[in-house]
Length: 227
Image (tube, rainbow, N blue to C red; front, side):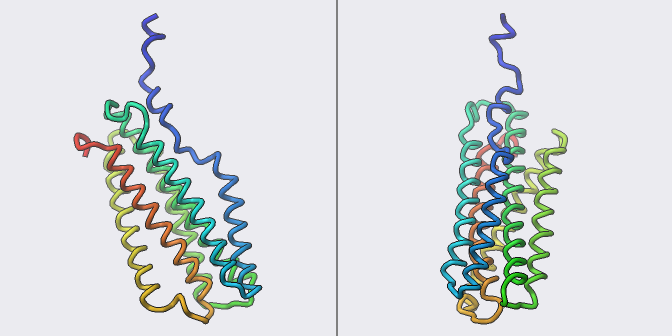
């Protein structure tokens, strides 16, 4: 009787495990393909608004998902009274989800760039370079998620602190890039890089928001007694 009345230690972590992205994987795949198709269609039809809408729709979708998953973590039941072990587990789940979401965002950028400079008449000598670079960074994000998942309890806190620092630096770098993109006047460019600039603008804005959400969640879940 006493065993059935007392929940196992893993109940909190299992109930709070809202960060699995498997259910979203098919939707993200369809969103990436649809976004790339709209961006390409806007270029071939010479209607910039279509390309912008295609990029914006995907960015909005992934930011909404990121906010939903992180919000569920921040408002997990009994968060304020959870044990250190449970908090580290929950923060790790959030960090894994955020790393995979950022990897997905970079993957979208890679697919969009490669589609633009493969399927349209527009040419830009750096299109493939930036596309490959985004694909590589996306792969690193997914690899970091795997590293967090496989980390031991003893290393988890150090890894979470490191990922928070990286999120801050990544967000600042993206914000700096956005400022340069806007102030340099590149958004008004009629050269071959104009589709890439749309992808950089929309993707960079989404990345800044996602980094901010990730940092906020990590600091909300990990209290002063752990940090």
